[in-house]
Length: 430
Image (tube, rainbow, N blue to C red):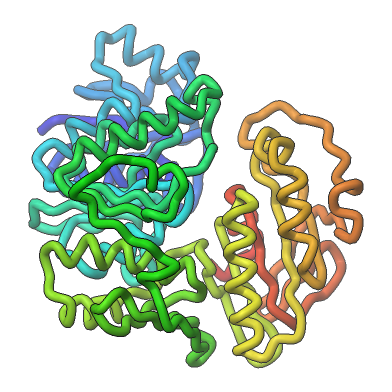
């Protein structure tokens, strides 16, 4: 039995790979800098976890796989190399992990987790995604099937190693340019190469870049004309979006907003290559959303508390539109946003856009920047967010929340961020 050690195993993407290989009868161990909900879960699943990193953690293993967050000076990585153990980055390990599968790879700047998870409800397949499916409570599902749904990552160009049989691209935006030498044309080239690796392509053809590609056989979605009759309902505080797709009839999907309809439409077009439409309509009803994506932590007639991963202004703008509709349908009188900026570089580069999209909420609270290891950049937050209240902490009660010492118990409260705001919003109510 081959033994594989994962450095940085607590990450949402790399933990899914570890779980997948465990199901394939590899002996898996892992380590991380600190304990987390994911590392605790992995331990319960029988994976040997070591906290924190230490050179002695790498013993008697055949292969070391390390996450993108791990630097060259990591003592476990150095120890593995001294022992002549093969070391692969997550990106480099993908061909080995995905090689025998018919991979349905989903990429894009926004919506790829949602599109991947909707596709997972439509096709019988193993699933490896960077989010937690609410139906199963995990980021990895293992099925005895040649099919594998994979959330493909453009941030380090690892999607080029995902061996796609079918490739979906939701949209393309100028993110993660540091990896591409701050050259937008290199990012575009990577997306085009990713699509051309696949036998079947499904794209949002109204995206400016994607519409420019000469993909003669691609299945193209034109959201403004192909998705019609969109309306939303809130049923027992659960959001539902209804829409008609082309001439295929009406569909209903869990979630709120036109962007959810678009993500679902892309997944439906992909799955329709293999499954008839009436069956897809039924299967779509099983989808229950993903954690941290318009994730309703609790709701009653007075208040809803929602956790959302949105950390780029485009995502926040789209989600706030959905939140406004949810508040209208559920009868909440105001929208309160809690924003935890993620990375100084992203905040600095998009500060005016963040200011614009958050200007229209009724109340805005801002937490300290979640640096994610970056050096501090001085930003005059008061200038860009003059009406915001700057807070230090969140304390969650079951049906109320304290922002510093201020009690919030009315309205739609939505938290945005990719740092630890999700943990703060949940408190002990995980």
